[in-house]
Image (cartoon, rainbow over all chains, first blue to last red; front, top):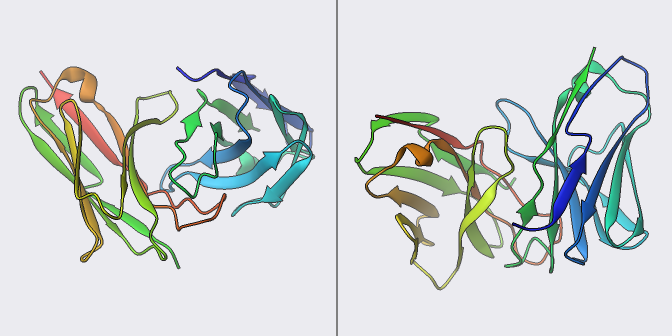
Length: 115
Length: 113
């Protein structure tokens, strides 16, 4: 299994509170991604990173920010959580750009509930 | 707009039987097509990646086919096992982009003893 650790794995929070999810990899892969998975939708890209301090927005980036200060860590922050952000969040990594044939490796997911 | 449509949404079969899952894509330009397996409560795991020039690829009891002309792919599972119960997700990235993956909604497969 690829060395990807997400934390926390489960979190319940209240509307309006800040939340940070962490993704840690031990594979030294250049690309890291944050996806959300909701019933009735395929996985949707929130933000991705193509190197330390290099990030870009995905399809559903509103309300989220990210940071990558080290190769191994990619943080996803919800500045003020809303109920619509209740979801399962997956981190993924790839050695080369995910749009090419580079294989994506996923973490185990972080289930976030916003009350 | 790039789209990936999977069918059926859900499927129940008996252990030992075969099944085929379908994926239609409207992604351009085409780079490759992937199938992932996602067990309940886990992250997706790659089964196969096929490029434009490949029309069949196997991974154990899983065989994926690709028809680039009709923009269809299928995943055939042979001699199903209880451990095959999972969601199977089709993914078609446009060529060249780091962010361009388009995920299907998946087919939820249940294997009954």
